Length: 197
Image (cartoon, rainbow, N blue to C red; front, side, top):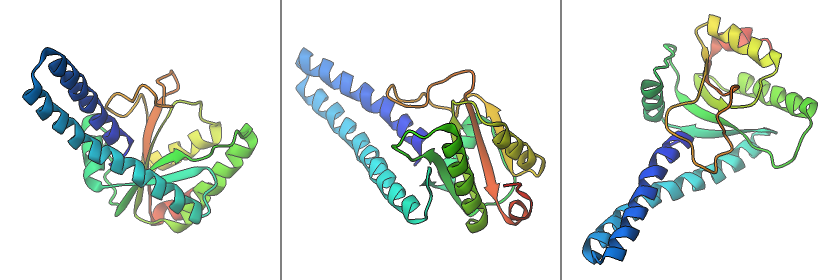
């Protein structure tokens, strides 16, 4: 489960929480106990998501990634995400990750771009048959826009206006702006030979 899967579970969790409070105030103790149980069932995968994020941070650090966090996601999750966003890539892949920025330090644009470029080069050299997906709301440097355009021609990527489906959490750092884009990129033997990193 990725970030959008977490968001999908969050909203019914909140809804059942509100229903539980209302039922309790109205004196429906048995029904409120049932809705509380359902709410707690939603809490289990939500807690599991944050545990997986901690593991992903540790693994990304072990790989030597400086600003990128690789969050593993399943093929089923990717299939669901593509279906609801009406996006598709026909090239095969064996594993998939969501890309997130993983740094607590404030970096200037030059240092961040350099580290991001180094991380992408590492991914290019060391991952095969791997799908990378992301969502961002910050203006993308021209270099990265050219990189995505190159991959789109190869049928290895897409880069579209807007967000992935499912409303983000209120506390999410990903705010919808005119720059918001989502995309996907497949690393395989073709990208290894041609990616201009």
